[in-house]
Image (cartoon, rainbow over all chains, first blue to last red; front, side, top):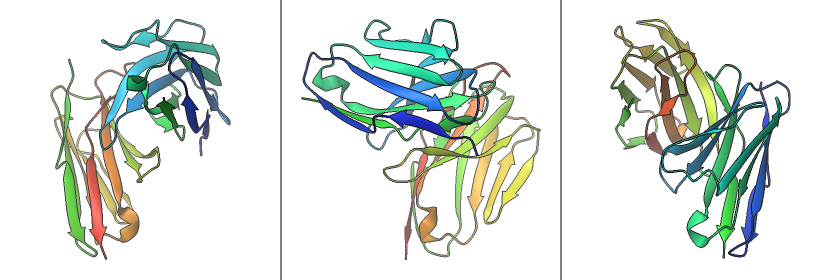
Length: 114
Length: 111
């Protein structure tokens, strides 16, 4: 089956620093990648949709200057949380898709900002 | 905008009992997907339904897509402890659009 690798799985950082999260589709080329945020015992909150070679489409209320998304190739998308603060602590999950239908999820990144 | 509602939010069952989660969309869907997220894990794709009235089975799991393509259900027969987790539906209202996820139904199974 389709495999999506997400790194790092866990990161602890100081307030004010930036954190980069990578999402790779290992055995297929993803036309679309999605970035989600998930709070404990809650659903997936879509942050942005990313298509290779074009600017990401951010959901309402998501700051594009704070959550920088780069989709440089059909197998790699990155999310950079800039100037992270404790309220940014969360579980971030990426998914990759061919055509935007079925999504294959990465294992997620648990971010803790001190 | 499109809303996808899922009920119940939580379901506790005794092992061997059946379980059903329901997904309702405010708009007609072109397709719907179901995912399972184990505790501490990430969502894993289970199945996609596309046709009106479609029914698909995976062992003890039965997935249905309503005739009007606005609702769907997942039924598990004779639950096992391995079925624990949160089940999400995700619906698309256009073939090229993003999917909207329901809030999920968290299933716990008592041995």
